[in-house]
Image (cartoon, rainbow, N blue to C red; front, top):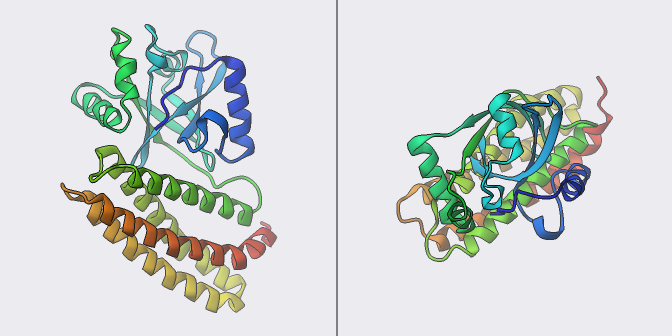
Length: 282
């Protein structure tokens, strides 16, 4: 989990531009990191300010930590969201409004401890300052599909799943014999996201395509069957990571099986659906 969040403005701007140009992917020091762009409204100026931040998955919300590298003062973005809790989040796929909630008491302490377990650097930052480093939850209020042609948007969503799955495989492989609490949450959040994505395809996109393109019936039938197989993997993965004594070896084996089936599924879906989705006009 990346920790460095206090960066010079010029460097910030380079990260922002690279993030937006590459759907959330950046290279260099932050390559492979879970990043988002947080846009807040200045507490004093009223101006919009965008900051790249590392985040922790937490189900339907994202967590950001106002570490400022252990500086004695809270970062500017934190002061901004205290004044204006409605913020804009870019995650590389979606741009949406979110409500920022500063966590307090037991919940803050528990989630900060979870972050420390995953990366001891958070504890090092806390040790450098007398302030209690805040943990902030970002809860999405709205959302829209990626801009541009629908097929290209589908590819962007799929690539985000590919990247997250590759990151989780790496985290599980490096975890030792057991899984930490944050890694379990990472796995469960991925499962939730894939389930929602495939449910949406089965319930909305596929019926619409069948109506417009009846020749796609065999392709869509295969994709629905593959959704069932992927859901079986997700069910097993949820069960494995939800137990008290999670076996990292068993989890990695299931993640590898999920990866193989899911990547083949996504490749097949993109081969047949992207050209058709890109040709659809409203």
